[in-house]
Image (cartoon, rainbow, N blue to C red; front, side):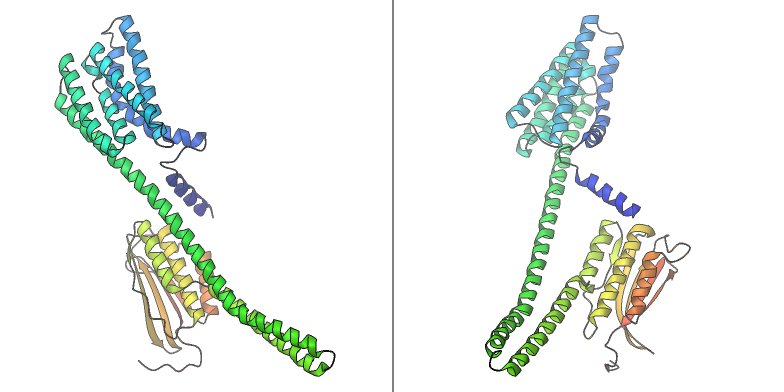
Length: 396
C-alpha cells in the first residue's frame, strides 16, 4: 500500500511538469529546477567582487544584475505555468536584451554570458517561428558587443548560445508533446469508459426490455382475469415470477461479465506496463481461447496481472517473456500461462499476499500455480482447465 501511494505521488509530480504551481511546495520545486542554470552568472559576480570597478560602477552592476536575474526568473517561471501575455512577454525579453547589452558595454567582457539567458528565454517563451530568428539575432548582438569590449573566446560563446537556445526549443516541444499526450490519454480513457457504459446500457436494455414488457403484459392479463378466472390469473402470476427470476439471472451474468477480466486486454495492458517500466516485453499475440471456460480465462487474466505487477515492482528485470499454451495433462486439457523475467528480485523468503491469493483463486478454478527462481531469474506458471469438466476434447 505504501509503495502504491509513493508511486502514485511520483507520477503525479511528473504530470505537474509544464503546469501552473498549485501550492508553495510545487513553486519551490520549479524554482529548484531553474536555479542550477544560473551558473553563467558566476563570471559577472566574480567581476563585481574582484574590485576592478569603482564603488558607483559596482553598485550599478549589482543593481543591473539583480534586475536581469529577476526578469529572467520571472519569464522562465511563468512560462512553466501561465505565460505572460504576448505584449508583456515581448517587452520583458526586450528589457532582458537591453540589460545584457548595457551591462556588457559598461562593465566589460566578463558579462557576455548574460546573452545565454537571453537565448534561453527566446527558445522557451517565443513561438518556434520567432525563436528561429531571435536566437541567431541574440548571437549576432553578442558577437558585436563582445568585439567592442574585447571579450575573448567568442567562438565558444557563439556555439554555447546557439546550442542552448535551440536546445530549449526542443525541450519546449517535448514538454508540449508530453502535455498533449497526457490529454489524449485522458480523452481516450474517458471515451473507453463511456463506450463501456454504453455497452452495459445496451446489454441491460436487451436483457430487460423483453422481460419487462412481458411482465407488464402478463400483469395486465392477470388483473383482467382475477375477478372471473382466478386460476388463470394465478398461472399468469406464476409466469411473471419465472420471467422475473430469469431476468435477475441475466442481469447478474451481465454484471459478472462486465467486471470479469479478459486475457487479451490483460496482455495488451501488460505490454504497456512493462514498456513503461523499461522492461523489454516478449508477449504472444491474442491467444486462441476456443472452448476455454470464462472462469478459467478470468483466473488466468488475474494471474497475468499479478505476475506483471511483481515484475514491474520487485524484479529489476530488463526482459520479461510471456507464453500462453495449451497442454494435455493427466487431469485433462490445461491452458498454461508462463511469465519469466531475468531480474534479481523474486518471491523473497516466501510467497507474498499476492501469490497466496492467486494460488487460492487458481485452486478454486481447478488450476494450479508454480512460482520460484529459475536459471535466468524468476518464473511463474499458472494452469487452468481449458475445457468444461465432462467435455470431451479431441487429442489434437
